[in-house]
Length: 288
Image (cartoon, rainbow, N blue to C red):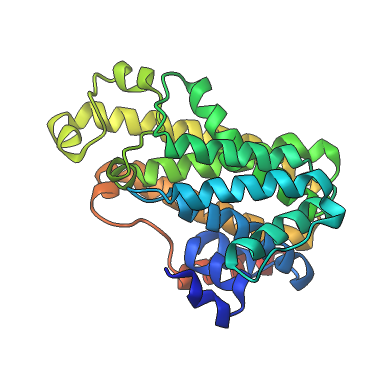
């Protein structure tokens, strides 16, 4: 979407809404003070992701953002916005989040490093290779969220695991879309284990048992990580759990739908609707 569109809207809200259905609608269940800061965080994340998430990434804009961030992080307290562009606005937002919530600037560095991996169309041979990407693309987002919510340091590992689990479901759900972008986040060793040459629909149809077993391994991995992440809810105030558990419910639903019919990832865009997200959120709210 043309960035000029955002100039006349509630910028952070619109960027988030147009870039992440599940996260956006679940975040609506946060108190407004936290919700606004979550929107600031995700405005930066989504715009940078837009630069790289295309068959032909906007490398020039991405490199400029990296340069601007490297300049800004040298003096967060005195950072100045150069102009009124969307890029500068979301840069200001991430600077605000890092400074306001005493976040590690290295988390932003890690995020940008993972986005560079997408530009480079990096291949992942082992699970450790994949987890390197996930750390920057998702686990650090969990760390940011923990800081925004004011969680204790003991919650950090669980926050990272939550980001990891959710990102992994995205990988499974988006296999077909990622192929069009020249990406595959799953380790080569996993494909070899199930005698799959690739993850195309053609290969899945030709080897249905092998593909189903491959997907089963990935959804089992998600469930293991999500189970570990769920232990972190003990550190989260009950009022703040509604939004997060709503998101988890949505990702669990996605994982369950894929487990029942792995071929669904080639047949439709499997994302919960606004109506389903609101229903899940209200259900969680009634339990508080």
